[in-house]
Image (tube, rainbow over all chains, first blue to last red; front, side, top):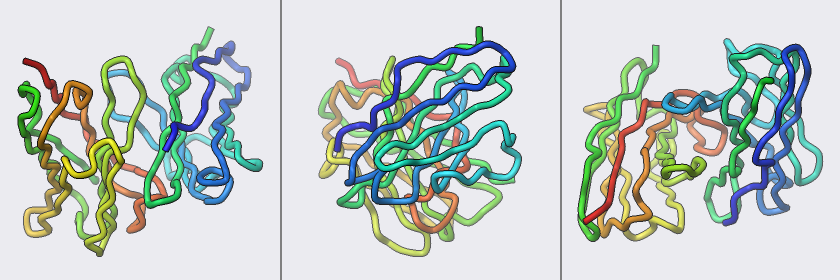
Length: 110
Length: 121
């Protein structure tokens, strides 16, 4: 199972909005409504910020939102803040009972 | 508050074995999916293995199938990852993660701090 495709890096200024894409196929993102997104500050534990394509766990800011169209899922962060600078990963269920992560996107807040 | 604590990492020679433990508190591992995810140096997250909540169904990534074994001890509220025939490309930080539900594919809402495995001669 190949990794889902994410841009290697994105950047934005404080207060702006950015979107990170996660492209898969009909074998994963396009078929199953279970894309999750994780924020990972290096050296810390990853943090779930979106599950089941567009749901936010309790305690996660509504500045984070998830969506999906066809084989591509997206994470949008609005009102960028300095603490949003981190690596972001998408994850999906894939056929044959596997999970697959995206390659990760490094977000830089300028 | 749900928490996970991994242990058992270390330096091991190629071909060797290691057992990782993941001690859970604040919830019952028998009720939720439990997962292992790793991150090799300079690389992204990679799913390794999962067990469904309230079931004994266990799933593995192709890269570890036949070499790694996930198990769960409900009486100790602990999950294990037995790793054999270790290779250099198994070198990574290994995270234990709790599923948000019994199904392992919905998402992972609690993560441990990770334990480092280094495979080298």
